[in-house]
Length: 224
Image: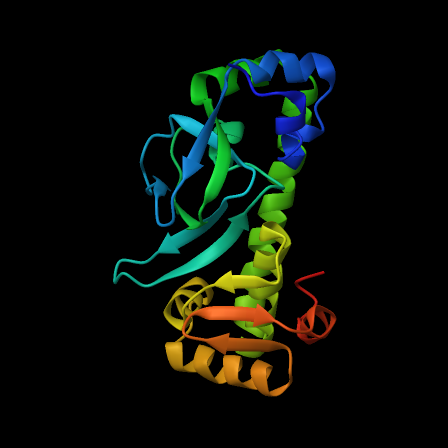
């Protein structure tokens, strides 16, 4: 059964479609649950579907030959996972893994390509989102190179909270270090600094943001 118009509003790309475009796309969408740690794509793997998260959060990561990795971008209810298909590619060079379990809509790659050839609202919105995601990736690269780990952690936490619409999240220091591409000890120090400043409470992988405004003030320019 195709998802309702109200259900589509849970993803901001789908929510912005016109009624006609929404009807064309809706009948090809399927609702799926994305469990924590599920790998949606591996580097070089052919993309057979794209995903529009509603409550799930997906991390896009680049892994080096030695196994070290860093997060390029995160995708939540504002976007789509699988932008390579929008630019004519059938594979991607990064891994897409579920960092926050939740729900999403899945769309077959062939159907997406047909919609892109048809043009109209769907293509225009997806191309604008692609530009936004590339901008996020570029900003992340600069942030990880030029800003302190404290600032990077604030940016990452704020971005996660934006997408899960909550003041709490589950994230170990190992996970945060992996996403930022830094040593675990650096994250331990950053978490202690933020806790001492009264911005967060951290205990055993559970983070509660106590002062959201203060957290954003401690972010670098990259969050804005």
